[in-house]
Length: 159
Ligand code: DQA
Image 1 (cartoon, rainbow, N blue to C red):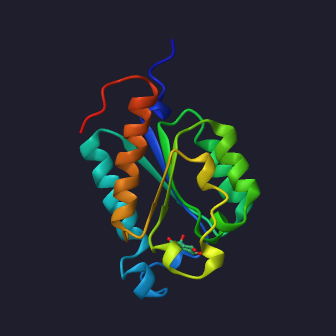
Image 2: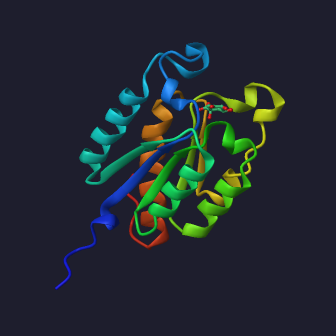
């Protein structure tokens, strides 16, 4: 006898390269919060919203691709691809392939920075995109991914 699928209640919080250095890396752009702070805040918000948050970070493109594959069947993905947003077609294709709603988050306002950061190859295959809201962007991302799931499956979105 099979029980309820635990993946159905899970959201993946996935951070890409160099985001393990949050707190010490360029605090003017990325604040002084650490990755552990981000993961704690999103996990706590998840509890309030009734979802379990699985956290992962990698500096390696293929590992990120595999984490995205692992999110098949989950409620959603909150993804900060880091610099891979700007050029990783492999990560883009993974997000597109899994059909799990994904919201892309950038801590800094990438559009107010160098021109090479203005393009995201991943954003077109996500449900939404948040940039420049600091680490609060991750919490907004969780709310947005859940809302997009509700809308996608036809429920009434909570305001
Ligand atoms: C970032 C923006 C990217 O351009 C950069 O390469 C990062 C962090 C952000 O969160 O603002 O690593 O994704």
